[in-house]
Length: 103
Image (tube, rainbow, N blue to C red; front, side, top):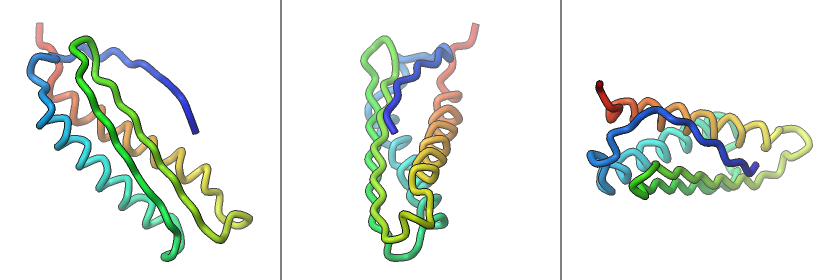
């Protein structure tokens, strides 16, 4: 699943350094892996890569999820990946809310 969406939430980008982004990325990765493990059989191979970057104008968020399993005819892996991306997006938005600009 490949897509690019932009959402404007008015962040204080000066306060979001790489340490904060790394912490958020680790939290997202942990939650996404936990979600996937609940959805797929035990021996399913998967990989989750989260990248967050503050380029000074916006926070760039990339997620790469790969699932390889033996039950492709039974389990809808694409749907699980889509749901996992939604889990990641929700966590990212929750975490970034802490850095919204106040008027």
